[in-house]
Length: 252
Image (cartoon, rainbow, N blue to C red; front, side):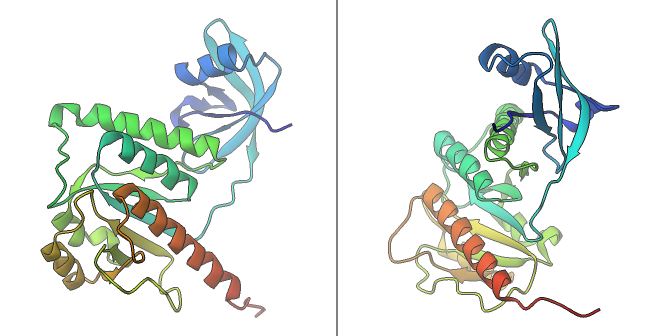
C-alpha cells in the first residue's frame, strides 16, 4: 500500500524526529486517522525525504526514527515567469506547474496586466501560494517544492543577472514560429508567458533585445493559465526527448 506523505519544514526536523505543522498534524490524526506506530513518509520541500513511525501525543504529531528516501532530481531546471492573472486562475497554474516539474515561479507585473496586489496583502498572498506549492508537491510525490519569487516588474526580469546563463524563451501569442530546439544549450531555462491581456509589442521587442527567443504556442489564442501549462508541457517533452537521444558517454 502506498504510504501517506506529509510536508514538514526543514527547521522542524531535528535529531531523527520530525514535528508536523498543525495543519498536517490535523490531517494525519483527524482526517486520515493514522495511529501511533504507523509508518508514513515526509518531505521538507528542499529535496530531502524520509520515512518513519508516527507518534501522537495529544495535539502534537511526530514522525520518529527517520530514514532517508532516495530523491531523484532532474538535472534540467525550468523557471516559469508568468504574468499576474486573477487569483483562482493563478493558483490553478501554480498547482499544475508543480505537477509538471517547474523549479521556480516568478509572478510578473506586465504592461497589460490589471492585477495589482496591495503591499499590505503581499505577504499573506505569498504564504498562501507557498502552501499551494507545498501541497501540490506532496500530492504528486515530489520532494522539492518550487521556489516562489516575489512579484517582479517585467523590465527588471529582463536585466536580472540571475538568468544570464539560462536559455531564455518568451511565448508570444502573435508569434508564428513554434519552439523546436535542435539541441540543449543549457541545463537551465526560463519561460515567460503573458497575462490575460497578452504581451504589449514593446515588451516583446525589449525581450528580444535582452536575448530572449520569441516563439508561439500554435494557431489559437490560449488563456494565460493554459499558455503557461502548454509551454511547460512542450518544453519538458522536448527536453526528455532530446536527452533520450543523446549518446551515453562510455569513456573510462
